[in-house]
Image (cartoon, rainbow, N blue to C red; front, side, top):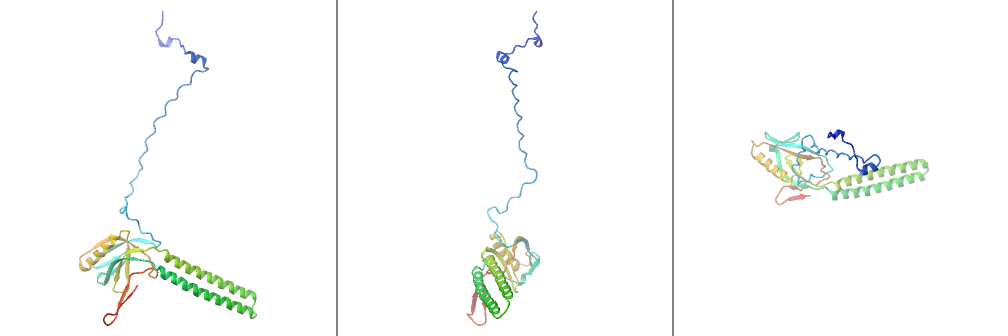
Length: 241
């Protein structure tokens, strides 16, 4: 009688399996599929409102402030100007006084050279009249150190002006000596702001608020346009750049 139970069937490996010691190794299972990358958690970064406008490069600190007109007052940050005292509102590109900086450096260099030579000759003369050599050498070293410090200071001042970039700004002049200067990466915004301030001067009920930048610069390092001075008589007009 023949049994049909699979568990009772004899195991007959193939010839290759009988000839190979230990038999063929079992095939390794395939690796599990990699998990898809998870999206980053958190809000997406805000888009640049001016993608085509490069920010103004400047070595001076630029600080964002609010420029607003309220109740007949023009506010630039914490400073305010009565609108009735505003004499002129205009846009311009201010340029560094590079030529003046070079001329000033050359003048300082000549004066410094003459003063150094004079002091060195004076120290040498006093040493020849019986003064001790240690005192004469100390005076000479002091003169050389002072001249070197003055030369470095003058050179740094000139390089600061030569490396300063131009700026497109909005200037608000008053009837007094005060002048407010603001800037922005968008030149059209400054031009439109000049018209808004002019409209507010003519319309007492006008009010608005705009975000702009204020920059700390020295009037000694930049040209602020032309100064027109008129004196008594007719045809007496002077302009100084």
